[in-house]
Length: 497
Ligand SMILES: [Zn+2]
Image (cartoon, rainbow, N blue to C red; front, side, top):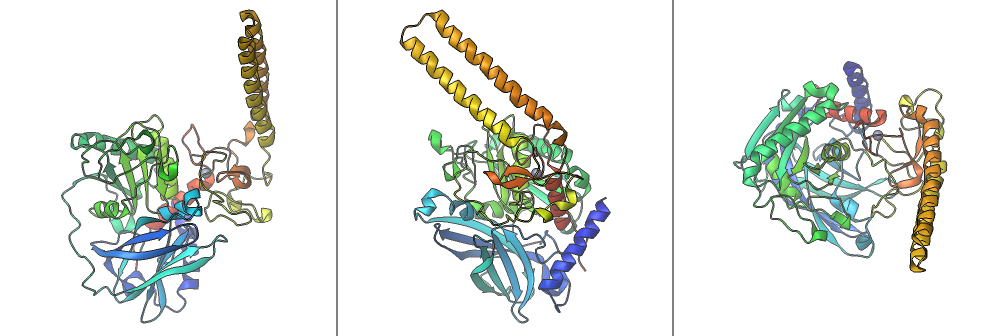
């Protein structure tokens, strides 16, 4: 199974590389050294426009990411980093990515013209000769346009080549092999006081165990290394601006990102990468020592979660689904402050949601259950109508009770209203349960289910439940499992020529 997937994946990569690198000499070693360059960027803008600039460039001791799929095979992310060899004008590396600004620009303050500045660190393998570093951004139709370019000469003495080691405590719970050919995860401690080191170690162990119990990570366990870096914070937990609670911590993780209740992000992106660079890593997971519910992620950068809420393990898997797998949220009708996050009539680039613009050619058609309807009827509108009726009736009954009390009605009369409301509610609950039961056979089927990507209509997901919409069984749907497995293959590909 593993072999088959790897073979298919390589074929896809060759097809992609064939387009981008026609006539170019193949192979990592023709273009790159064994090391990496880290580019610390600032991105500033509002909804109307953005600009990028380089703050600093650092040399890192090892390029641990893919050495075979040098041209991005996925097409994910609102931005793409492209590296061209200057002398031959050849595209020698590309990688899709996302930024905090990309989320900010769809919020109300950005639409009203408030400019904000965000950090982002990007890496690519250290080139042997001067390169053109280009960042392209997607427009609303997902078409790419260049927004920044700069020539980078690897011989430039402005590149900071200081040692990566900063004296932080390094823990290695699982080392699968050479970082060049394994997926390397790094856990970073945020909001742990100095006395919390043992707790951090236990939290890393617990998260690692959960990851390796969850497909497709379980199947790839032998190709995944896990390391952790502990830098103590002066105070524990994180900022909670809505509670006016502020703690002095290493990465300044904060809830209420974009003024959302349970959304936590990290704005010190440069420092986060500097700390992570003490070990080889392909993906960053930040753990925050807190029992509050919540987390967040920026695709292809990092995910962050608290550790001690009853749902922290689920949040970890969900957020890593975004940051590592490039997956979209499959839930909808929730408190999300995005305006027009997925424009109508445009197919989202994420692998696990679709606008179904071509029903004969579903994005995950290879995984569809045989004979399944496209789109798949699962009683959604009936259920939602009954749930709305239930809510309206409960509200009406509460008002009736309040009125009766106000008029000084007898306790027995008030109780009669309450009893009737409870009986009505039971009937509605039973009708909802009956619809669920009617469609229960669809629970393990892959279809095209309406409701995904924050939209109740017009966007579709592959299965009724998945970690990306919420699943008490803590399992990804088949499409998300495949997308994550492809990403593991990308980072844990065999050695380059
Ligand atoms: Zn899914």
